[in-house]
Picture 1: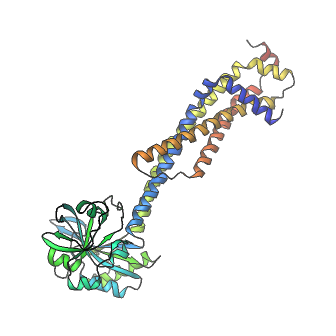
Picture 2: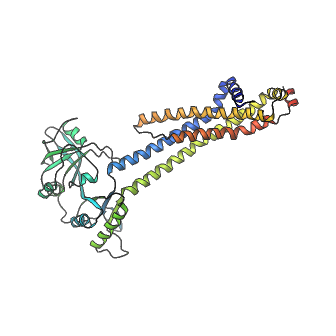
Picture 3: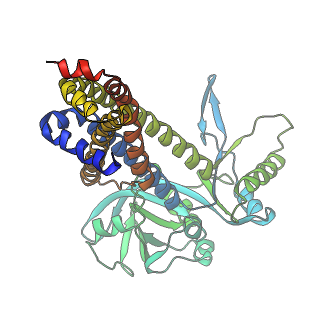
Length: 408
């Protein structure tokens, strides 16, 4: 009997009990659909993590002060002011793999335009901060190093601040705002950045020269930087640059060999890799749980195939009586099992795609569905059909033709 005939008989047998066949493969449908959805969610999450860290800028190091101790209690990194403006200059001048370095000072405060007010983050920094963050200007231009040296009262606005103070699609360049009752002239508007790696709105910001920030907004701390230092390295040298900066700061701060550093250097590439690893592990856990449904579906297929063998015992005996070999009977029932499993796999892929699209729309989260996962899910469905259909098919092929024809 040809393979085409075997498939034709298998499909006719399945269609003869369409509802029972559908209920049989329901476990496969749910299992494959769950695997597709979970993997799509996981890959979408990894893509989201990569996008948010890319928005922070590539080849980026963030340097903070040390941890303060008070009453035996140790604070977090940056709770002690240990970084100085001279440290910043030394990093810029003495570490060859540093492309840009800028102080990052911030305060949350109220911003006023002529008729509106808005609470947002005000950042004091230098023009190098924008290429460090890979942040382009949407309108106008950035302030200059001369503005920093002169303490000029100029500001760059994020798009959220523009929308809140001046209205959507407004051009505020040349207009005036007030920060803590100090007037500033808007010289530029940043391109939209979206959500930061910490889940904050990166566009809800006003950027001003750090000299103006210290003199007019937040007050100075003499030689100490009351914030962080952002460093952009030459491509591929982040780890080496971090070590070079650490050695420089240990030398400048007179830290003895084996002593505890009074600063902290964070490599965003390492943080992004750790985040992706965590997301991937969680996704694999969810997918593994979903695979249990496939195994349950396989047991359902075995069960219904055993019932089918019992119901069709006389048919099996008749086929053997007219010349069908045991291998033909085994092939027939095995193909039926695989067709059931593959049909469930196809329907499961459709269910998974639909669920992924619905979740993407509901949570505004991009889903990244790898075609390899679809192929793997279908292959696994076929394997389930073979494994759980083999015993019923073997049992059918071992029936005695005489006893089978006598079966009622």
